[in-house]
Every structure is written in structure tokens, then in C-alpha cells.
Image 1 (tube, rainbow, N blue to C red):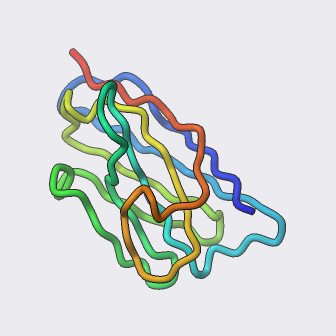
Image 2: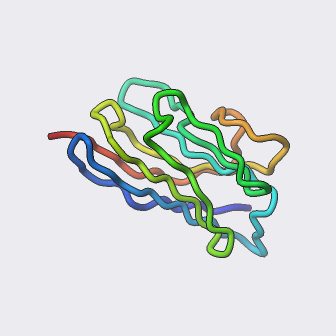
Length: 126
């Protein structure tokens, strides 16, 4: 069982930056072979994958809409995954969720992930 807790959301102006954190915990948890992903859901829209990372080798994938602006990273010692979000746009406004799955191969589809956090609100507005 994996528990995930997101933090770091908030209100930011267009062009600004935020860093989200996802802390993973669980009995005897080791994140050696997991996919950890960030997903987001805007009002009236489906939840979508933003970026996902393999804890095995650090490989990552990004949605086209965030490439070059967002960076995912992992601190294995802290069981924490980060999402650095730069050059934020109003269309990035959404609830951001962290999710985890036992790694088969790196993928970033919502249906593949078993464990979810409660989400953190990101609002980009002037």
C-alpha cells in the first residue's frame, strides 16, 4: 500500500513558477520499481497525464503541452517526486494529482495508476 501526499499548489501569475511535491509512504516502502506520475484535472475536463517518471532509471515522459516548461524529478532518499513548473499559463490551472504504480514499463495514462493522492490546486491568474 502506498500513500501519496501532494503539496506546493497555490495561486501564481502567468509566467510564474511553482514546485509541487509528492511524498510517498507506506509500510516498508521502497520506490525502486515504481512509476510516479503527475496528472491534472481542470473543471469540466478529463484527468490527463502531465509527466511521469520511472524510479528505476529516472526516465521521464511529458505531455506535449508542458514540454520545455515542466520538469519532473525524484529524490529517492526522501521518497519524494517533484514537478517544477515554469512559464505557467492560465490553461495550466487545474487540480494536480500525484499517482503511483508498480513499474512494468513507464506509461502516463490515468487508468494504469493504482495509488492516488488527494490533489493540490494550481491556479494561474493575473
